[in-house]
Length: 131
Image (cartoon, rainbow, N blue to C red; front, side, top):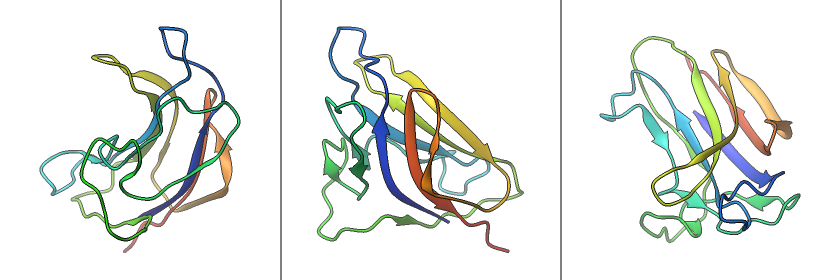
């Protein structure tokens, strides 16, 4: 399981000269959901993110491309077979092409609730590998 707290852009990566449209993609190979992607822009996306500003995460917030949610929550449970690394990656969303803004892969529990620098972005989250 993981809990996303917030994320931010540290660079304007938009190829058209604007601000980055940030989202977090979490990939867990072997997920029984039918896809390795367990979180993406359908859950949370912030268009035209101001560099250095933290945006609190909640499902359906800001400019999410998926459905709306009636309650605010940020914890995500998922199951999968085996123990491959889980990747947390921030992207700048562009039509047809998304720019990577940094990522981290984890195979053990980690607490980045104070934030982790991914290069062109930062994210605050915790990841708990359940037995």
